[in-house]
Amino acid sequence: MKNKTFFIAIMMALIPFLGISQVDFTLQGPSVVQQGTSFQVKFVLQSEGDYKNFTPPNFQGFMILSGPNTSQQTSIQMSGTKVIKSIVSTYSYTLRANDAGEFTIGAGSISVEGKVYKSNTLPIKVTTGASSQPHNLQQGGTQQNASHTINPDSKDIFVRAYPSKRDPYQGEQIIITYKLFTKVGVSSIRPRTGSTYPGFWMQDLMDPNQRLVQNEEVVSGVRYITADIKKVALFPVRAGEITIEPLILDLTAQYTKARQGRTGDPFLDQFFNGMFQSVDNVELTVQSESVKLNVKPYPTNNKPASFKGATGNYTFKPELSSTEAKTNEAITLKFTIAGNGNIELADLPEINFPVDFEVYDPKINQNVKKTASGVSGWKSFEYLIIPRAAGTFTIPAVPFSFFDPAKGTYVTLTSPAYTILVEKGDGTVHDISYTAIHQQDIKYIGNDIRHLKLPPYTFTLTGSVIYGSWQFWAIAILLIIMFFVAVIATAKTRKQRRNVALMRNKKATKVARNRLKRGYSYLKNNQSDQFFEENTNALWGYLSDKFTIPRSALSRETIYERLSEKGIGDDYIKEIVDIIDAGEFARYAPGDKQHDMEKIYRNSIDIISKIEQNLR
Image 1: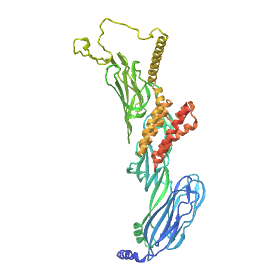
Image 2 (image 1 turned 120 degrees about the vertical axis):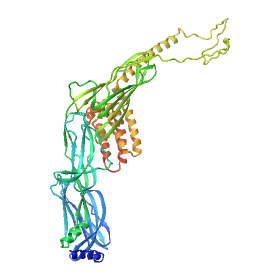
Image 3 (image 1 turned 135 degrees about the vertical axis):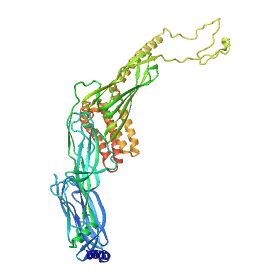
Image 4 (image 1 turned 90 degrees about the vertical axis):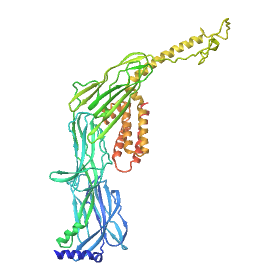
């Protein structure tokens, strides 16, 4: 044992003087890949001399996703009594196979110490289905090639989906957590699929830029490193069996491999294998299983007329600023809904205000909290009310109904009926002040008060009299007509204001453009998350208000159905759905999002303009 230790010390001391230069230039990569997937090939140069002028092949039949990515490492190996020192330089490319068939990647070339070396060629078979052949990554020197076989279908790395419930009620909040399991290192994760969930209203519960929290978990006796890579809250908008498509990830797995010893001595082989290791970056595609949910419909028994789709557990708080007022003085009536569930879809039934009250559209505020446990928050509706006549008026009780999935029943919370006493408002009074006892000394504020003229009086005719003439009667009739027109217009305006759906329809375009304008300010400040959220809300809100589709019923199916009824062409319908999908995908896709935001912003304005022109 002492002799071996002494021998190792001597060899380590002589390494700088015993190095033997040797050149080996090889092309390494898989022999079978699946169509549409990405994979990696490497040109590996083992040499101690100076090298330059690397020339790759044209990669005909494949798309270059990245490369060349260069790296360099130094290794030392024993061969008998010789110590071989080599510098390993790697040129790696990430490729994608777009077409099925058999292809050959040509040889690359490089110049070492003035001499040109060519690599081998690499035949690759691209299959249309899942490949049954393993991915072979070859690494080696000139004397012995070592291989490492990697099977993308193995249990080294996989992803699973965990729904919080598989039989929810319609509108009930469920949480799906996507967890990654791995026994090897992972350098990057790239979701291939977007964040669209047909049949659901979706809220992301994780920041895509947050650091992943790693844990350990044992599965079937095997220890894995795990991390939650995606978590979403889903609210089903229709009943029945709904299948959630798998989450597909492209990722780079890192396999660590020790250099194979060539000394013939097991002790020395073990010693050098522990010192010199290499890392293979392997492009893999993994996907979760699809998730099937059996969504139960809302119960029809005892379903209240005031139910508008709110599902969860809520409180209801009404507030009136005053029960006494004067005509033309404003009072406010505010309702606040708070709790856990689809708070953004919560709405109030139509409120029957007294006819003599002028009521403006409610100001809606909301604060939605998205945490790992789900979606919660509050939403308020504030009405500005102006009494136009004196008297005693009653605002009837306002019910708010929601479905509690935990109890499987409807719950109705009701505000009290408010009695409001309205007094006639004070008119404007001109004040007169006296400073003397004579009429001639009266002072006035305005031009309508004069001192009285004392007799004798003298009257003279100063012009023609209009009373009784045709002009008089024409003006009188015109005033009567204008009076009735004003009465009819006022009644129509009040009726329209009570028709919430009609008012939303008229204001849909304006509200959407205001939201797009706010989204544009986020675009200029490169706030991508705020931009995509505001832009998506603008498009969904426009469709809801313009075509009278409740927020709780919004889905791609209802959009196609309702827009087709209005005579909107299929091309326009597909375009607006594509814009929504593109926005949701770009929000979580890697890379520069500035170009995506500008394109989506322009397309959103353009499609709203097209639909407005089509409706005329």
